[in-house]
Length: 270
Image 1 (tube, rainbow, N blue to C red):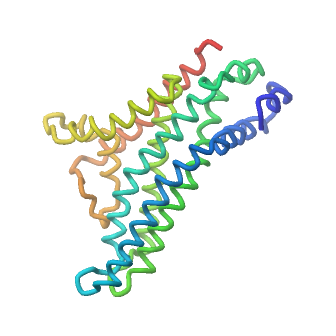
Image 2: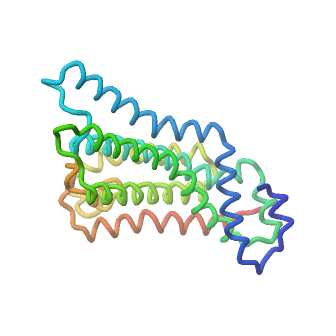
């Protein structure tokens, strides 16, 4: 669906318009081959490589190398996926938020008469629909391998897999929302991605070890998400922060960037 197609539709008053806008946002992301390739390589490929290596190690030396599946290896996979998820969600969210500005088509979308807030809101389901494929497939591979390859080890239960699925969805959605808000606010993909990756992989690890920051540190998005991770996965950097602080932190890191992105979209010069 192109800008011209949207322009041909009535400006307001049709309930079907907003789903069409969301579908258009999804289509714009799917047409970016570089983004599609990066999302797949950064999510699915590492899971395939990791479990292939674990299977080969167990096959060549079963006495010292345990089965490739089981709860323990699922936990390790989720730790890796949580880091990859930040990168993929940042790429998708920033692209969804800043692509129209970079391509110079934001003005064309505005002059169709659509509400700017509707244009911004449509990026949320469109981006999440795109994101669910690489992240969903990567997690499905890890979950399936953890059960099928468990052999005599402890295979994850259905309840644990359900909780882990919910956690992965939450982590993907919150990181995407943060990236979408920052991308829409700045209007520059390169700057927004640099800020997000630098914050997550350079600044947060430093703040994590400063215990004097107390609840502020515990409310940081990566740490707050770890607090909600299923205990059976034995998160490597689990905190003892309160559940209320974690929930408040996740809500803040999700809603505030979205609000800023919506405000900038509504006030940006066309």
